[in-house]
Length: 357
Ligand SMILES: N[C@@H](CCC(=O)N[C@@H](CS)C(=O)NCC(=O)O)C(=O)O
Ligand SMILES: [Fe+2]
Image 1 (cartoon, rainbow, N blue to C red):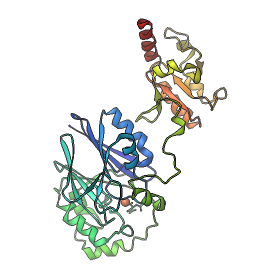
Image 2: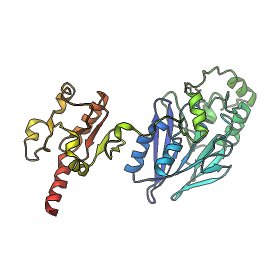
Image 3: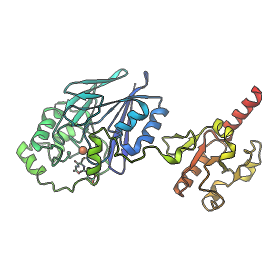
Image 4: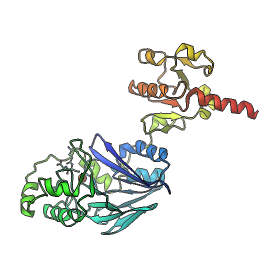
């Protein structure tokens, strides 16, 4: 079966798409965003997927692509249009190329116009197509930089995207109003720029008078994206605040650490137990040296905690402490992690150690 997730980056209103094969575990990411690499790698791990390829629909002007960073971390390939101007990719795509992931595949339609190197990716059964900024929901990508051209865009939409079955669901690269997808039939009928009886000349007139401000990050994003999203020299891509232990980021949005590591590093961290007193002194007991700060008091009682020493949050199962992890992060504590599985897993581990002695 196909695994499909639509992910959103609020800063740039960018959609990233994860497609995977649940039998083989192969996956691709379309248009991942640099700042969301933690989220995306966590999701891949939690869904037991391995990333084959990052596909960029084009050289983005408003955010840095995560292609380079994902290749550094996961050794995946990077695929872009041969017209994108991007250097250092693994594969340069031409019309009708097919990219497989497990038993599924995406067909490449080159759809220039927003930029010279835009591509649309169509799922093998034509049920979905990923259009980047070639067509947006009731809109389309601007055409005023990176080789953009209204006539070329008009033809890409009419001769390629509108030739797909009317029921094909279209997934755009952005939406600035919170809409998530559309269909070929809908855009043919209701896209005010490109649908209905709008001619190429009408469309060019529309596009040449959009009067949009340049994307705020264009001067940083385009040079980086021309190198697959390699950030400028001097930017540290490794999160220093997570260098203190083998942390794992979760798709739920917090860092966690395994009981085994804590067992071997008890002296170098602050352990904060967020259960209530009865549980702390109850049958499950508590970890030696743990400080009791129940969750409902945590926010107003952080004075005793050092910002210099990593903090590990603990509860019965790892759920309340996950909440506490997010709270402390929001309060400005940077070196914070949840004890995965809480006291239950801690006991399973320590009991196992007793057995093995
Ligand atoms: N305010 C945004 C503008 C983003 C922007 O210009 N997006 C491009 C896509 S890369 C676009 O074509 N937008 C179409 C539109 O806003 O109608 C920013 O500064 O990043
Ligand atoms: Fe774009």
